Image (cartoon, rainbow, N blue to C red; front, side, top):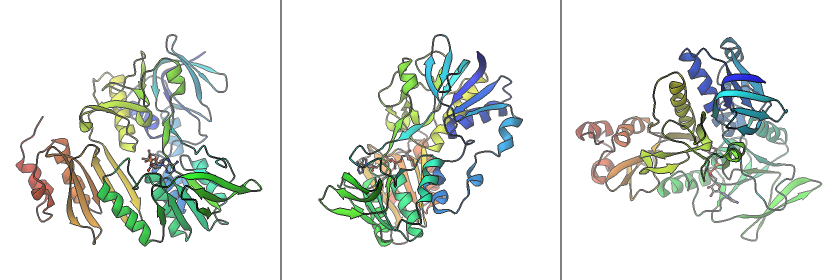
Length: 414
Ligand code: APR
């Protein structure tokens, strides 16, 4: 049986970064990445943006050029998935039947796109956006599609709406909650995005679900929505979140209700097994010490660094401030911190100019900012979130006063 010192499961942002960081830190042992996609690690965010709209070819979204991996002796076991983990004897079994023994295992398998379960969910022309293959198969049917229905008004759904409205498609977004971006943003931001999409001709249906998808000759022709209406479409995009890809780990005894639980060192409860990225849940000081499972590139790559540091003999704990971004139309959204649980939302700047920030407070403490085309606020506001600064809404609302000057005034609270 083949033996690998560090076996990484998943070749996304997290998995790639573990291997990159280990070699940067002069790790001499053997490293292998098992990835179920046939491609070298690539950036996922452009899939719902520039890759979808055709502005960036695949070569430009690779995380590293192809020769990088071979040069650093990072063994790429692509088109292969881990189907079982034996945490006692330290080996995994692949879908191909092969067994690999490991010294340390890093589970970075991410998530799989949730599918609808109504009738017609598997018709031709119904797509999710999680992998290159998803987008490539969608693009093959794109020319014949004029009307597109997007199910889910999260980042994926809204970014896809923005990208495809550039391609002159008629778009309807169906969102089951009463506002878009409900999982990730505060209400004022949701309302702003709804209005922007509306101004670009996107029809957003809130508090609306999908009853079934109708087809003809195996291909989608429209969607029956919960208002009783029938909306015709040649293409349906489903962006209703992800399910953490952890089944083999769970079978092996890993704990966690929402993904795999990890400690501040990204260790699971199984010896020698770490978990990072979209599938890992940790206690976050930025969420009032509750357990969170963050879905972001930042979280994946920062947790990867934590693991790499420990595997090269340096103690490390994960306490990075969370950040996110989304590009839609000419709007650059940058978020720092976690806004859920806020009791106050303060507007800075001017919504009409599409340049503003929303500062979220909990008991007077700055916990997050959503910044639209306001990189300065985002950069300077990060210090307020990191230091858990306590500030008055009136001070924060005055956009003639920089957040930097406010940050300098407040003593650091630990
Ligand atoms: N019908 C309509 N809307 C639904 C349904 C449904 N059956 N089920 C869920 N939704 C809505 C949710 O209310 C939510 O607004 O779909 C949206 C899904 O949003 P997210 O959970 O944020 O997931 P998604 O946008 O698919 O993104 C998945 O990709 O870009 C990353 O950060 C993103 O990691 C996340 C992942």
